[in-house]
Image 1 (cartoon, rainbow, N blue to C red):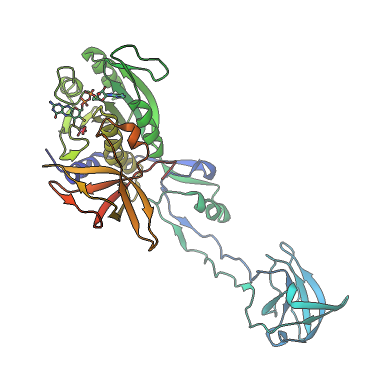
Image 2 (cartoon, rainbow, N blue to C red; image 1 turned 60 degrees about the vertical axis):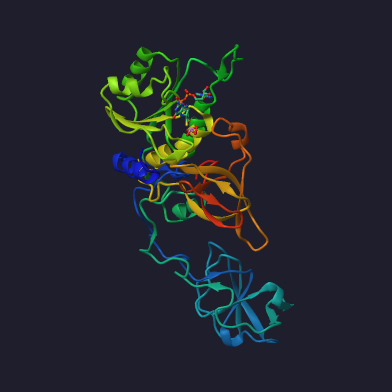
Length: 403
Ligand SMILES: Nc1nc2c(c(=O)[nH]1)N[C@H]1C(S)=C(S)[C@@H](COP(=O)(O)OP(=O)(O)OC[C@H]3O[C@@H](n4cnc5c(N)ncnc54)[C@H](O)[C@@H]3O)O[C@H]1N2
Ligand code: MOO
């Protein structure tokens, strides 16, 4: 049995980064940048008014000053002259500030004396309500780096600097094979002794969040020949195969036998982890193969811990592992002899702003209904018991698109 860290190192070693493709920025959220993004100009590109009002010289920006309105500057239409003493230019938010003006006086801080004259009501310092050219970004600055994951907040920046499409890393193709004679498709009513296949759906959802591309999903009974055929065909066509079930030591646990008979290279088949001890990782032809335990919670946990890391590393994500935080435990948790336990928890902050992990009441690795509320996994070291009130490592579970 190997440790979680050893398992992750092996996966990251085997997960070869894929090549780039160009996509429109509308489709780029969640993808990993394959190029650096460089500002092609200063931002703002000119001294920009931040308020509707009047552009004036600094020495004129005093209470009771009466100034002559000599022109107008709007967004997209500048006033092309230089402002003199005792003059004001009517200006709109977003407009270029005319040469000579050092202050924008908001309209509320002025009074119209007549058609051509305004009076200032307050004093303002030089630079007030003006965003100087280049103060947000300078031409040539690297805004984002290759390896960063694109999020929705980055799209405006990409567009503003002319990137309507970007180079991102290809999404790995992924095939799901759920195994077990007891399984029926989720849209069917199970007969006696049968259950609905929930794992392939849960795995597909987690795979989408990890931005893998689901190519095909199969439901295969405990039948060696079919399993071998599917594995063999898929291993030529996708980068990742995820099997669920059949990795334990029961008579009908066929995953490892099938992989061996096809000549797969098996890297590990047991991890010091609960849930997820019987997780298998192998390579068959061009595909990396994960045999996840059939217990539904074990399947989700091991997907997020291992398969996600593989899919994210193939997309050259800078940090392919689950995000880790530290949280105060709301209650005592007990670990497992000889294995790290990853226990489901909900998260909340207390009145001091500290992150609190509330362990879920759950019935173990088959209890996916309780697990539906999990937001994080509490990391409990081998043989450990962690008291309520102490601080623990927690791994955040990605539960929405895309993280
Ligand atoms: N003698 C031992 N027995 C078991 C061990 C062990 O070390 N020695 N390990 C246990 C652990 S831990 C786990 S986890 C399971 C893993 O078993 P398998 O991967 O072989 O999974 P199955 O036996 O096929 O199924 C386990 C459980 O999950 C249900 N299941 C399976 N597939 C699905 C699916 N697609 N959707 C919903 N539910 C599914 C299945 O019906 C079983 O109830 O082995 C322990 N046993
Ligand atoms: O370790 Mo198994 O994956 O708990 O139920």
